[in-house]
Image (tube, rainbow, N blue to C red; front, top):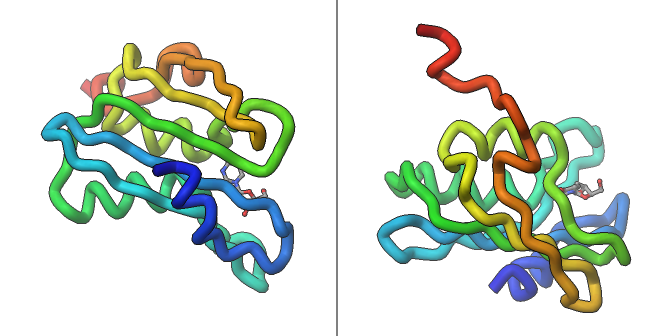
Length: 123
Ligand code: THU
């Protein structure tokens, strides 16, 4: 499903497609692609597109995330996406990171963003 999502990327500036698929704890899947902008900074990554679609639909808990992109390295989320995901995804949640060949490595959220700043830090 992340590969399908990558096919929907809107990337006229980088031509670098990214697709993501987030599995909610109730079993629903939310797909996202990167969506670029002529002003560059409004660009949103595939991971956040998927996350924000899911949160809008009322989801608050997730079991897994898959990401695939056009690069030869494994598709790891950027720093902004790691922080956005940490709001809703527990440290043990697996993130499947695939390269353009479909080869993948699995990390946990905690490995990708150790010592994440969350609501608990504001007690
Ligand atoms: N991008 C993502 O969608 N996810 C990532 O984890 C890294 C970067 C997008 C943003 C932009 O459209 C393109 O990849 C190049 O940075």
